[in-house]
Amino acid sequence: MANILGINTGSTNWTDAKSAISDFYNDGRSHLIVTPNPEIILSAQKDEELFYLLNHADLSLADGFGLKIAAWLSGQKLQRLTGADLLPYLLEEANNKSRRLLIIKPILSLSSETDLLRVLSEKYPHISPLIISTNRQAQAEESDLNKIKNFAPALAICLLGAPEQEKYLHYLKENMPVLPLAVGLGGAFDFLSGRVRRAPKIMRDFGFEWLWRLIKQPERWRRIWRATFVFLYKLIIWRFVLPYRYRQNVAILMYRLTPEGREIFIVERQGQPGHWQLPQGGLDGLDLVAAGSKEIREESGAIHFKIIASYKKLYRYEFTQENGHYQNKEGEKHFGYRGQEQGLLIVEFTGSPEEIKINYWDHQNWSWVAEKEFIQKLHPCRQEAAFIYLQKLKNLN
Image 1 (cartoon, rainbow, N blue to C red):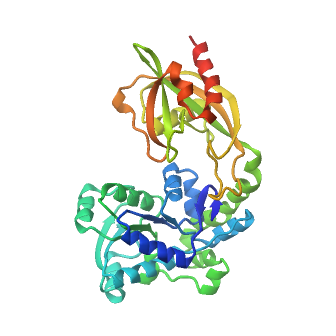
Image 2: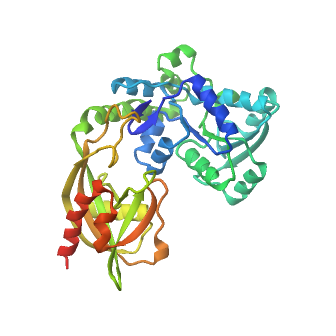
Image 3: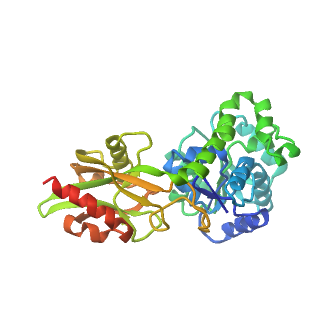
């Protein structure tokens, strides 16, 4: 297992991956496989939903030689399994078991629906396919969703590219009775259809597949630049610079007025039952008020609120196992920022109760708590900062 820019991946070898896939088909639950590569991991740095989906997939296979370099630079071990190698195995297995296969493809793509049907009929004749052509979007159209439900696929392969393919498949998982196996594979079908020629094995083994693609598809130079040089630059900063720095962050104390007094909005961290805290987020180049307002809208759904006060750099803490940090799952190494330096934005909620809608990737629950009960409701690691923030609120009276 390696942690690359906050994404855990690469713990599974080919034998274990095959075993896991077999189990996925037989346990009666829905599963998502992701194949992060340098380009996808870079996208996840600015897309919290994608970041969450990559780290909570049922199986994460490291795709891209750049990830092996990243693991080596950070003293970690990583198993590389590419989407281009995974696809033929999935199709062969599905063919042997006569499975129903759903393919979601972009309307505009190198491989047409005719190309895909030709490949399936010639090489995998026992597969029953359904192909959905759609725009690059994160959710299925209602008409498409109904078709998919009626078809009841055992395997879904999405070719929309990241981040849409991961989000689309998550949407299917949440809106279908069961989807045994779902995987996003971008342009992997283009190799099978013959629309794109894969790099020779020797170039793949030595990590020069990017050079081959640049020669064959020069119009992709911007993507290749990001996946090689930009990725390496970000990795070096993450590995050797950020561990000595504190991320600039803002906590949001949002209250509402009731006949009984003020109530404060708190959230429960996703995947950590009982870990209640204030909403918070990084400044990411914005000023404190702009960043805090953005976090309110994204994390609570609130759009009607009044700015009351803001304070810079009130509290600093280091990342620990309890308060959240980016490290490999075994806990052997810590990467990224050392901790956070937190400011505070105080706002008054002026909207209706129906306005509150938290996103699933940050939080699993929310609550309004009375001001006098606020601190004791929070996780112990959040209470020291909360005491400081509550005093700021009281001083405004």
